[in-house]
Amino acid sequence: MKIISYNVNGIRAAISKGFLIWLEQANPDVICLQEIKATPEQVPLHEFENLGYNYHYWYPAQKKGYSGVAILSKIKPREVVYGTGIEHMDFEGRNIRADFDDVSVMSLYLPSGTNIDRLSHKFMYMDDFHHYIADLRLRIPNLVICGDYNICHEPIDIHDPIRNKTVSGFLPEERSWLDMFMKSGFIDSFRHFNKDPHHYTWWSYRAGARGNNKGWRIDYILVSKTMEDRLTRAVILPDAKHSDHCPVLAEII
Image 1 (spheres, rainbow, N blue to C red):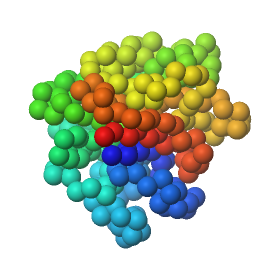
Image 2 (cartoon, one colour; image 1 turned 60 degrees about the horizontal axis):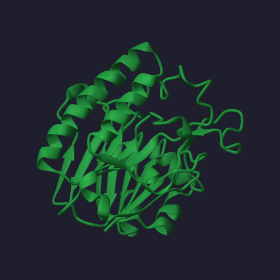
Image 3 (cartoon, one colour; image 1 turned 180 degrees about the horizontal axis):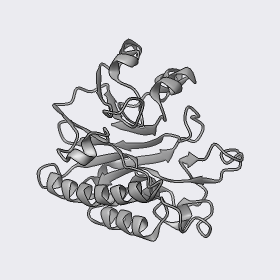
Image 4 (cartoon, helix red, strand yellow; image 1 turned 90 degrees about the vertical axis):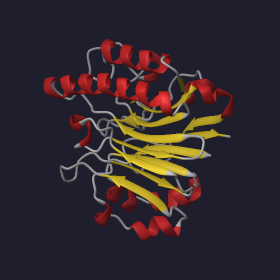
């Protein structure tokens, strides 16, 4: 199974920048989208179906043009779960999960901490999400959690760790949570294969950040440790430029 995760920063905008052509070429079995900023009625669903994604599931936020996640699949899932049942998470459309025969794939969009109120909300979300996943794994041990975590894990994952140490997304408390979450039973699929620096998934639109590769690695595909021997490849795809993020890919057997 080839799985891609991509924060598209608006699916309609991404489509206008050639997203569908890229998707046909990338040809994942499953793609998890974040920050879709649209309802299904606003998206040309037939164009996805023409590419073989006959199973597509959209979970927009209640607020128009904000947040939202989706899963598109060439494989029919046996069940799809919208949200987590935690209200303060779900009305922003931040989690959707597709359960296949022996693996479950989740698209996650963890909040950013742009101000004090949102940072507080982010920490509450992180705590509740951890408990939710701990309970879920008792029933579904083989989990693949794809998405924009809005956190850089280590200094290697950000272009300037010194000057960003007090910025949300690289705060010690955020990094500590992500470290704890990974160590609770997940593999950072990209780092499983690649230990090199200067690999990022998000760049500011300002000051030529992407051209100068001054980025942050905040998009991950985390795979349950129970599936370590099934993980065959994981890469970042920086040449896809339909968003301020780029896609990440993992393959499992």
